[in-house]
Image 1 (cartoon, rainbow, N blue to C red):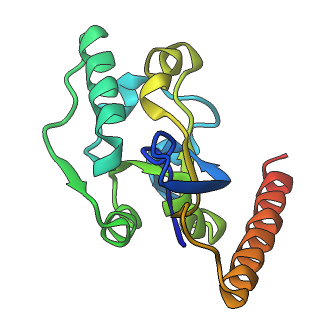
Image 2 (image 1 turned 180 degrees about the vertical axis):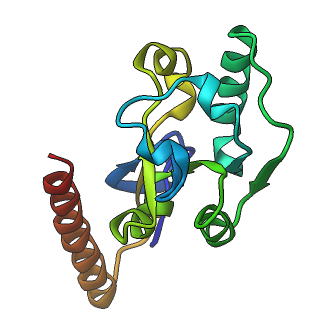
Image 3 (image 1 turned 135 degrees about the vertical axis):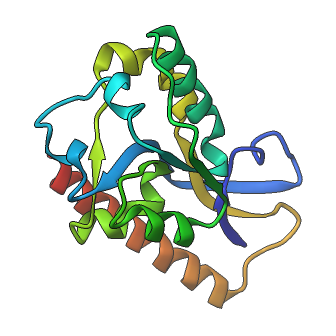
Length: 175
């Protein structure tokens, strides 16, 4: 089995999937970034003042935010970093003035460590881009014509338990 994004697996009868959790995209900045200290939601006008970095999976969110900025008569900065390396993106975000469009799963450790904070876009503006920030199911994926060995079953059960504990822990921090 594999632990993977399950976006395209649902329509494949040769595969069995089990969702562990849903990952979501958000807007993140360094803990010392000026937008980290606004005390509330920010507008696209503020976001557009900074360079953006994003994971390749977040292109639709970046495009939607760019379109939102243009609709407000604002031109986003030309400097952007697009990468499929989560390690590169998070390490670049920390200590910089970039605004990151990343999945919560990719920045979670940095958020817990207090190095990165989530920025909330003005709700009226977020409603115009929210569809581009779709949550993605993360879970187990395996071939339908196989059975898991006892070791694989134990590993799967341990991952499931840890995922449930972690999700509960994150929920209690969020509440």
